[in-house]
Length: 518
Ligand SMILES: *[C@@H]1O[C@H](CO)[C@@H](O)[C@H](O)[C@H]1NC(C)=O
Ligand SMILES: *[C@@H]1O[C@H](CO)[C@@H](O)[C@H](O)[C@H]1NC(C)=O
Ligand SMILES: *[C@@H]1O[C@H](CO)[C@@H](O)[C@H](O)[C@H]1NC(C)=O
Ligand SMILES: *[C@@H]1O[C@H](CO)[C@@H](O)[C@H](O)[C@H]1NC(C)=O
Ligand SMILES: *[C@@H]1O[C@H](CO)[C@@H](O)[C@H](O)[C@H]1NC(C)=O
Ligand SMILES: *[C@@H]1O[C@H](CO)[C@@H](O)[C@H](O)[C@H]1NC(C)=O
Image (tube, rainbow, N blue to C red; front, side, top):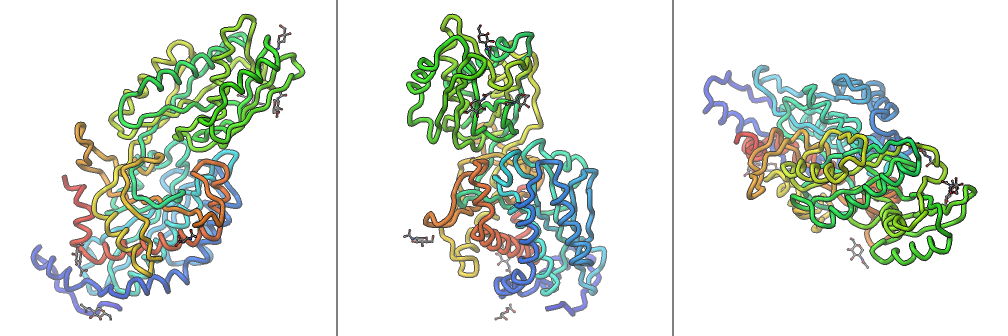
């Protein structure tokens, strides 16, 4: 339905409010409209997501993903969006922009603006084991649905998609934020696939890379492992803040930022195969789920201990293959004549360990970092930190609207959604929000931007398909299933529904953005 009613030239705020009500479109059939729109737009965009999944690229090298999106909207669907490749000075960032104005309305009237975030970076070595192909799909699909719906309904609006590189490594959204990429948008939406549905906060995070250097390989390995033991003990004694954690990642073999390795090798010299086997067996118990090991004499005369495990998310609290080698080091390191080396790398005198530090609230992160760096102390030649990821807080209002909508038949009659206080991971989308919480009550006081970031489950129900948690290698398979794409279609359509309502209803927009005015 197009609006034909001529709008008066608005001079007073009272008139503007009255007029805005008169101009609101009737969206009572929006759910049905969006189903029809989705049938048109989703398949082509899903093909892009499948291509991204098949061709994983780590942060800042997402050229194929960038080009797929840019080519699709410039060549295959030309004229719908203003397409900006390489946006804001980032080679693999893109922007899509669309404005719809009703001819009768004063062209100077500012438009309400909805933004969608798209991510498409993969994890080193394990492909799309965080499912960012779905984040790209969700952003592109929801935005395309909103675009078509506002045109059909005659709702003046602007819609933006920001393609944001390198979520996993160096906080691509932080760079884009500084370049102004997120300005001028009323509400930002994204959605992250995971193993279960929840609107929930995300942790603050920082990585501290401790660099161990020396002249003798054995001394460097010993210094690194002594430090790993010390940090484990310090963490076991309690870290400051709420739900704080520190997880170590060793920079050899399958090292990857933001990935807990599924395989670690530690060489032990001056002991025997039997002693190593007995020692490891006495440590390995049910607190190491899925962890196994092999030990064998290697050609240098030492014992090559290699530990294997599910790997997984750096925030995971279960004991990893690296923890098993740390505890083996602890048990054997005081024995006379025992030394340690890195099998296959027994001459390197440079070994880096990444300490992935997380805490529920941004304001506690520095104290946790200080505890970790002081525990590392002078064992390391240097400690380098990366860009922090602030905590993402759940902004009020939109979660309720979204969850109520998902209960309706058009959105799968989903009753297993809720708002949870548990923070399962971290996201650089927190940079847009820049939440301020009360230091005592931890209640959200204000935010720079409204960011709505639900996490949605993509594991098929009843164990009929693979299931895993983000960053575990099997999550890549989950993120490639037909079932996962069907979940993203529903979430994108529901977000589009909420977005169209916001664009059409000033009261609702004011409620959603109330947190900004404080
Ligand atoms: C909105 O449209 C529906 C379906 O066409 C109709 O039943 C309803 O009366 C309309 N509401 C208003 C306020 O015009
Ligand atoms: C040896 O160390 C280098 C540098 O840390 C690393 O790139 C390489 O993968 C390591 N090789 C093995 C077999 O662990
Ligand atoms: C293990 O110790 C032996 C005897 O001291 C030495 O020859 C060998 O180089 C050592 N191997 C490693 C990997 O350090
Ligand atoms: C150490 O053992 C693992 C597991 O058997 C093996 O894959 C690796 O190649 C070994 N490293 C060396 C240097 O022999
Ligand atoms: C299978 O999953 C569906 C949808 O989640 C659920 O309604 C049903 O009860 C499940 N069946 C069994 C046997 O678990
Ligand atoms: C606009 O949004 C407000 C707040 O959510 C709601 O109470 C009201 O019913 C909405 N108006 C229309 C016409 O849907």
